[in-house]
Image (cartoon, rainbow, N blue to C red; front, top):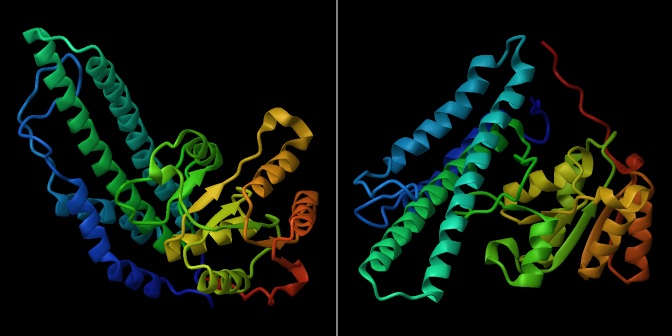
Length: 330
C-alpha cells in the first residue's frame, strides 16, 4: 500500500474524494435509470417487473466496501495486502461490466438483424419488442456496473495514490467519473472503424514513457505534465503501458486531472522487436509533445524517433530526480 509522505497525505486524499462526491452522485443518478416498466435479462426468460437498485445505497455500498478494507488492515501486519485485495474488488466490477457489455452487444446485433429482415407477423412483433427490452435492460445494468466500477476505482486511487489499471480490456464508461484508460487496440480500432466515441478520444496526443525501476520523483513528472496541460488543455496521454515507474506516475496524474490515457502494449508476436514496432505505431499518430525518462533501449529508440519527427521533447534522467523522501516506519 502506498505510503503518503511529501507529495500527498491520506487525509487530504480522502477530502479530495469528498469534494468529488457531487460528480459521483450525478454519475450514479444518470446510470441507475429504469428505461422501461419491464426488465428482461435473457433471451428465454419472460419480461418481469423489477426495480433498479437505489442509486444512493449502491454508491454508499461501494465506498464502504473498498474503504473498509483499508481501514481494517491499516497499521496491522496485513496492511501491505490491502491494496491487492481492493484491486481485486475493483477488477471484479470491471470484469462484470465487461460481461454485461458483451451480452448487450449480442442483443444489439440480433436487434439489427431483425430490423434488416422485417416481418409483418405478430410473432415477429413480439420477438422484436422483447429483444428491445433485453437491450434496454442490459444497457441499464451495464451503465450501472460501470458507474460502480468507476466509483470503486476512484476510492482505490484516493486510498493508494495509484490509478486502478485493469489487466484486460479498456476502462471506459458513459459516466466518466474518473479518467478513462483505453488500450491501444481499442483506440486504433476506433480510428479505423469509427466505433464508439469513448474509445476514440479526441485531442492532441502527448507521449509519456520511462523506465520502471528507480523512479520515485512524482513531483517532477507531475510538474512537467501540469505545464503541458496548461498549454494543451485537451491533451490525451499515450503511455508505453509500464505498470510501475514513470508510466504509472503519468496514469496517476491523468486520473487526478481527468485526462484520458491510452496504453500501448507491445504485440509479443513480433518477438524482440515488439517494443520498437510499438514505438513506430505511436509516432505514426503524430504526437504534439513527449516526456521521455531514462529507461532501456526502448526509451532511447522512442526519443530518437521523436527527434527525427520534430516532436517537442522533455528528456529526464534518473539523476534529475530529487532525493527520495525517507519513509516513516512503525
